[in-house]
Length: 347
Image 1 (cartoon, rainbow, N blue to C red):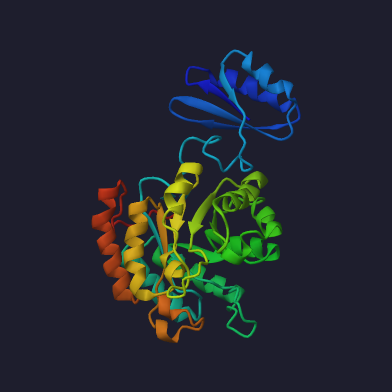
Image 2 (cartoon, rainbow, N blue to C red):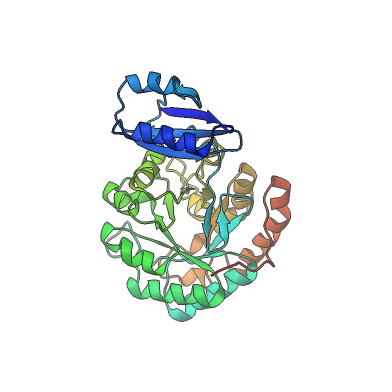
């Protein structure tokens, strides 16, 4: 349930209400908005608690929440969550672009791609060091060495970095080198991994499972939030349908739906969402129009010879640069800011 107070209720009174709630053996989460403060109550509460709260001064309303996901719900947290990573804000007015290869291959490769991402106006360098592959004999990534390569390239060119983490055992080492940890579609319901990610504060990009409902997706995010990590982004990366022309079907409706149901930032992945290079540009623009807070786009200097074999969905550097130039014109029309000439503020 949630207890709602007005903006006239003092911070001291809100703290008294929180203390009363937590004495009942449940957890209270405070979310302050411009017009009201929402106190979310997590746990098995005594049925009498709702009536007790209604009688307390400062409490305007008590509402029971039927959704299984609480902390991810906009009912609990009415205002948009904005994640600030070294000066780059994700979830606010700024449109954020994450670009780079599917996998880190060599120091020279990731350094050159980082330079191109920065030159085009991107803020985040993407690249996989550990790769979950459908076939056991496919390229699986270069491991920790890839993390080091990408971290050095990101630092050199003033970019944040994002990489995929596959197991709980590798969370700490990935967090040591990357600014954002990605949970891939196959691991969306790897609950041991999600619980581990809840114990750290490194931001997490959670990709939607390719057969998952919105409810399942948000409940997966709930695992991370419930563990204590509030820095979660949702990523729509396409779902599996009967259509075979595209690798997946990018569910654009997920973007406004998730923005309505949840306060968490929403990122779109048009590369995996289509699996076809010629569709990445139009679906990127469509994602921004649908309300996405950011994009994660594959770009490679030699996509036809990439080690993962996913080059068919990777943009060439000139295509990536032209796309970001178009986004600079498009973003203001849709309430977002995007300046390809602005330097990222990285500590």
